[in-house]
Length: 328
Image 1 (cartoon, rainbow, N blue to C red):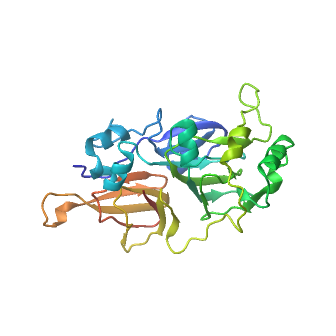
Image 2: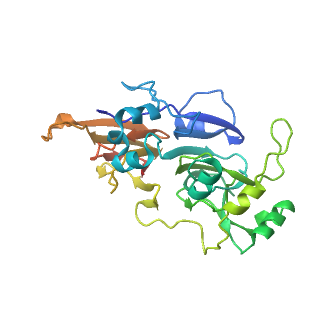
Image 3: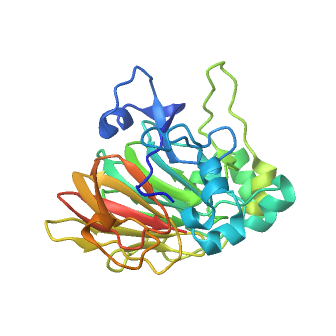
């Protein structure tokens, strides 16, 4: 039985476009430079999250699922994914524009890479003036025109662009062209997949002076060429995104306890975006009697992420900040 939420050591990833905000945002002391990503919760091979405190310290996320199964992730997730944790949760800090990308859907990713596809969502935390998000096509193009526009550097002319602001949300199903513009600090929730097709990269060079690899041909068949009226989400209430892969909600906290309520038999991920939070949770017991000792409390600071097992069904939060909650 797991009797407390689980905290993992973040994987800090330095990249060519990375900024300098993630460490200070999370309150981490490090000399690492150009940190573009903090993988808060990951089961991607080679970067599986490891518990960094408490009685489970040193265990990987995969080992925990092997040991606790449905008790940790919920029966539907365990039956569908086995010991593969279904979601990857990140913080992203873009000092420069990220490459224009697209991700394959499940069918194409399984066929080509023998892994899941990637549907994801972004929730903007901080921006600088003139920060932008790029998502979707703003005019109809054909696959042939896509290739020609990549070749003559005009692909950006047909991609929808949005001035971004804290609180903005973008849902990005597999197949949708997208890019994070310079100046955005955001949370990303996605399927557990590291498959990305790079479409355009502003003719940037890597650290050795070589052009960064593009995946023009692979992306051609992965793109959804449908044009939609808008690609920016308009959340209703607390709901930020709800699809077959994840359910993401936002909560503004106060001194009055709010229940972190979802409808799924699933683990719950809580990420503290601003301020602080105090979270109470029920401690699973073989007894049906509910007593005060069956509840625990944990405090969260800005930038922290916790995983609550599926058996913790009565989770409540108070505080002075903002959190997002995630289930699969």
